Length: 136
Picture 1 (tube, rainbow, N blue to C red):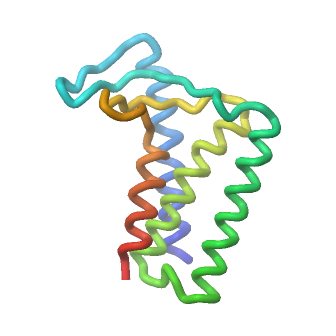
Picture 2: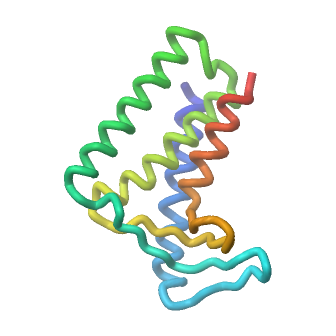
């Protein structure tokens, strides 16, 4: 439980910090990463209707409940790496959900040109889930 909590807090804090930094520093500026892409301020409001906010909150809570059941009833995600990864995935999802529930746009800023723009929360979700499922 400690590692899951740590993963959640690290992912959530990193997401909020990077979005705040991007909102302050990159609102009108783009940083080129050469052929790899760029860092630029992109706002997404696609989930901001109140019905969507409730649905997203319910989905997040159901996913958390299911993960807890899988861990304590079936013995999944018992290793430290798996627990940290699962916590990071929930922390990333909580970061984006936090923005939506506050009525603020989700700020994406990593633009690789060949993939839709994303942020640290999205990275935490994907890497966290891969880590959780691949860890012993």
